[in-house]
Length: 178
Image 1 (tube, rainbow, N blue to C red):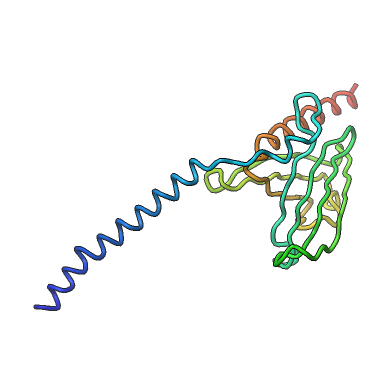
Image 2: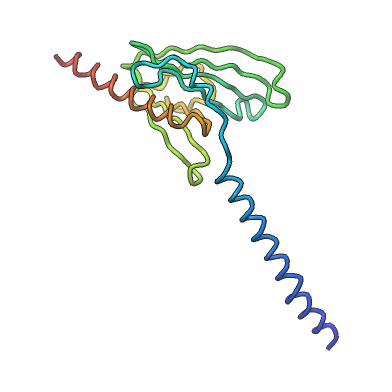
């Protein structure tokens, strides 16, 4: 009988307090995320082609099974897309392995898309090549598909970059057909 009273007490007050505490933590975290101020974009000082951004910074995690990570820029030039990445160790970021530059002609890029995951907290820029070796020796490449993570503050610039690529690709196809 006493054991049952203790269990009822624990269930009524302790578990209710735990649920209340968990709900409070979730609410505080949600408010922190929704009211978070973003820093000014690094891309704001990058040259602009007309109304569209020509360069977008990106991040690649888990290179070489998590031993390295990379930061870089994807740039749209007149006839090519230039991917530039600096690969560093993921533990301290002090050891720089290599600086890699890959230039791909626009005609070899099938599509570029921007996709958000986890309710917009995670954004990727997808570059699909027309061949398997389009983005040769670029980190985390699978089947001619290159995935680049975009920071929250650079999403608008990335969307403008994708739109600009679509117009450049469409105008190039019209010229080639004429």
